[in-house]
Image (cartoon, rainbow, N blue to C red):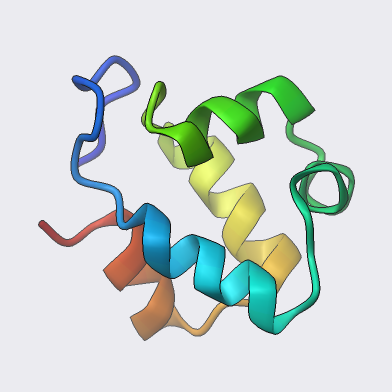
Amino acid sequence: TMCKNAQKGGRMNRELLKAEMDKRGLNKLQLAELSGVDPSAIVRILNGDREPGVKIAAKIVNAMKLKPTTATKIFFED
């Protein structure tokens, strides 16, 4: 499970999320707008300063139309 206050670097696969953003031509601000997540939260998540909770992870997954397998690799696997 994901923790909102996990230590920096936590479990999330930020590099894979960034790669998926690149594939879609999305920058941080565009992802924030598409997902309805605060831009500062997106920046903290991508910088490793914050672990997204389930609600934010779901918003990002839906906004990017990530496949379940990819979403799992980004947000749920060690």
